[in-house]
Length: 111
Image 1 (cartoon, one colour):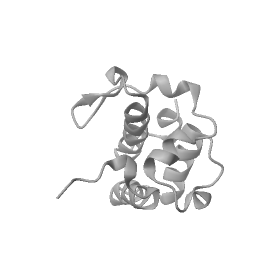
Image 2 (tube, one colour):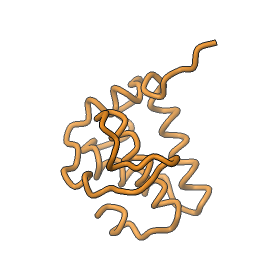
Image 3 (tube, helix red, strand yellow):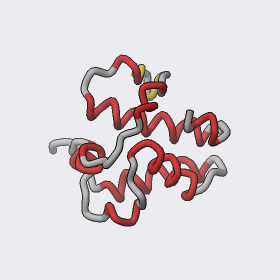
């Protein structure tokens, strides 16, 4: 059986996993939404129903120019060393949610 690429997954499923990761550590869905708005420029997560994760990333209205300040490792991969733009965006969002879940204050998460 072929593995589904994360970029082909429904955004809602990826979003639910990101929220669950944050909530498990005492953070809120609203905080995850704030991170997504800051990073992508989307006004609301509610409008993203029906998109794949790849579409969510590639159609982002205003990817934050400060995203280049997101550094460190996610799953053993250094975010700043990723060359593929889509994978880098995916890892940048994952890194921000990781930092949120680890208790970092929002003003530090949003650089």
